[in-house]
Length: 272
Image (cartoon, rainbow, N blue to C red; front, top):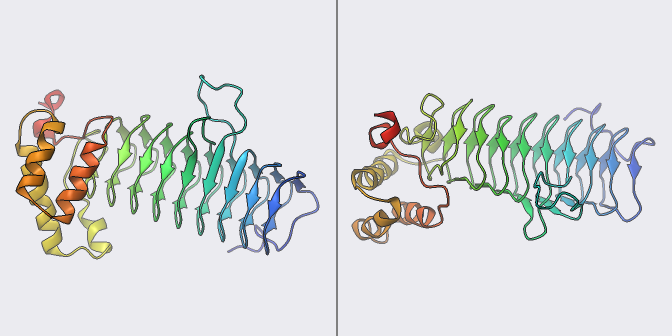
């Protein structure tokens, strides 16, 4: 951690508005602005030229790098003047340069979990829910997106509102995603919105065995070999793999889908 970025204490040029709550051992760099509704918890580190406003909470040990803006109103034309949105950021996150994370709208909130690596120039829109142990590499997330744990999203990718990305999935760089990417899956930029197989490297790195990977592949083979709407395949999937933790997770994910599901190239009519 650079001492040039995160010097102990609050710099004399930083503006801390009355009402802001600052924890123990917090560092705030030069020319940063902290609004009156902000809470910064113990050992958090805010670099120079950072703006944090709204009802934003920064968790313990989280690092925020220069020129990042947190907690500003969401880009939602239904609520153009709403400045009281909630943004909750967990602990042990690294938020690099020039990121923007918007607060929630009146009926929702934006939530960032723990132990995430949010790389420079990432944008996270209003009402997104970001899980834990996630890598976001300079991506753009529209509103109401849900990212589950241990996901990797490649650089310069864009994601449509209400998309969901399942656990341990990976989306390669420069992708355009408008459908849900299911758990354990890989979606590649050469074939946007398509299931390109399993995130094998990522699964192995996280301790999944060869048998696990083979079994998950069998589940997806069964799912995609069926015809008809995805919602009509959920019950057969549960019947085929009763009490199976991987099949149950996939079926549960499908039941919550709002954007439909990425399909293999052979099953995608637009690619035939």
